[in-house]
Image 1 (cartoon, rainbow, N blue to C red):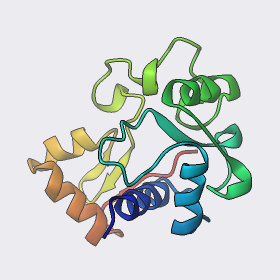
Image 2: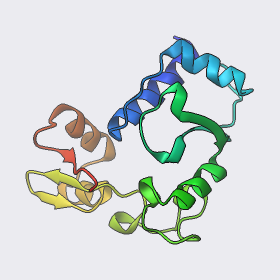
Image 3: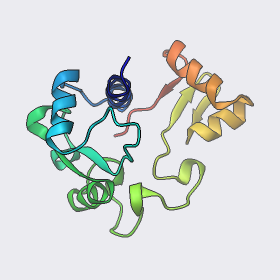
Length: 153
């Protein structure tokens, strides 16, 4: 499997886990990146550019994406007040939203529902179950009725 195909599958999988439709084929995705000056088969590619959705809403589709730096994507999310930055003031959550917050206070924390209750972050669930990250990932994947991320309202 090519490096680009692995990166495509990873991107598509992350979109799915976030509940975002991914309506771009591998060929479309690959040539879209090339048209934006990025060869996803290049091992030295440094991930400075990202595929952004217009208004940070809707699906990943050719008519709803643009190429920007990660920094610009974060600024756009602040300006649109959408996605994971919704409700945050400008300056809260800088590059990729990192604020130094941990656990459920983190900008990227996703609530996890488990048989033992609801946890404010993945880290809190891992600590409560006294398991490693890999085990939690396996449970989330293989036991979707018992372990799942709570939908963001």
